[in-house]
Image (cartoon, rainbow, N blue to C red; front, side, top):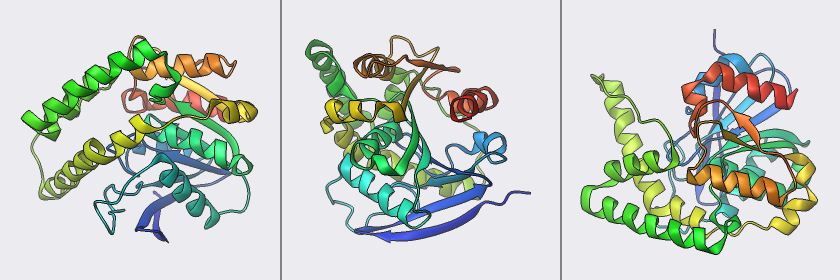
Length: 273
């Protein structure tokens, strides 16, 4: 029987929805862009016996809708939200796992609040600022094509393009129940928020490598074995080298936690044990 518990906390501009479950030390799980507290559900049965899991809808997503939908979003704002959420749960340091955009938030949090972090596992963080300028220029050309697809064909087509470009699996299709139709409507809002607000915050983010290096003992950089050659893998590989750390292999691809949840959980437990 699941012991998932839901709650919310007020932070400037939004009420953050979050869930807790399991037992043991706190493990905060920060999802990729265009996701919410439910994204890591396939991992819960394997992790909850070992950790108290904390998952949440980042501001702008699902049950954490902004009071002002046009408010500017930055990675620093996400990091501040995480600090406030943790202050409501514990006074000590915690384990953090972040994937994709969630990994970027985790890295920023280590830089600004290293006292609150036991270990951060950053899975395929897309941080263009760590790459050589020539590669960043190529990425910006791809970004223009992505934005043109969103303008011409809509958010759903752009997200499919993005999934292909980062090496992530597509979502399945099938007959929808009334409940699933509600969730699909919410997911469409999440797509729009990611495309038009959060993706810009990620693109604009300048990672402070110098400060992060001071706390590199708290950081593990990982990437999927099937992700080689894709943008998030290149960022992860470059960042690990710049921190003087080995890149840790994870099962499958950019969304390996969905592809192979049991093997992915085993990898996480091995790193956190």
